[in-house]
Length: 311
Image: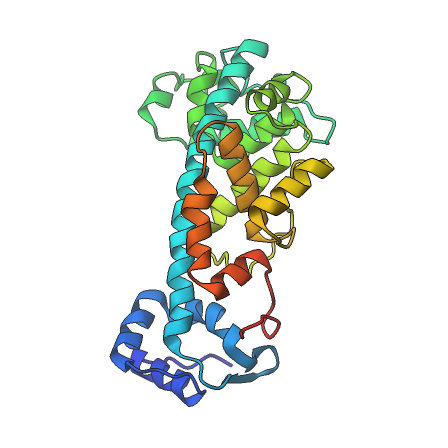
């Protein structure tokens, strides 16, 4: 059965009927006109009695301003995380193209998949195909400068031969972060992964997984998906060793290993070891989480509806 359409005023009334305290109905209408009732429901359902089983009544005394504050504070965290990931991503592009050019070749070797064989099961031709796809999608003039427009297949799609003159550092600039991640992981046998990991003082055994987690979080933020109370399926590994784990515990406190918080810890470690930032987490993340206890709990310990401690 199709859901009924509700005006913004009716949406506010629906929330009030279910027990949400709305002191300023006009302000709530404006908020819903910016955010949408459906998106906001991903946040307010944690304050309902049992939404998984149809009981949408709010717990007693819950104010809309409290939930809205979680939403807005989460947005602030997402913005600073996105900016930090951008810095590391650019560094990774730079290091990959530098070491790949040195180890494998500075020309069209990358689009041909050379040096991209991995014991983890990544096929070099598969990685090369992803590189070719990203190059063909690019509308950048600097890519077109090196592309031979005569080299196309029967469907008019540029082939590998179209990029004979393309330098690896040009190709690296237009790869998606996901494809770049694939290239880094697949470069283990050529020694490129080892060079990258060594340049930022990170173990080559855990770096690919850490990069994947950054790609994952970056894409969630880019598509405006919720990171509060979100459980990460493919969590990144933290630096091993008893001393390292104790140091992380002292510096960052406790958190669920599958939390977004875990990725933020990894990002902070990478920023430090790459000498991009010295106190990013302390200056940008910790104060924002400390400002809202509900946000902090949902980032550290993701919970399902009805499971979160709201006291």
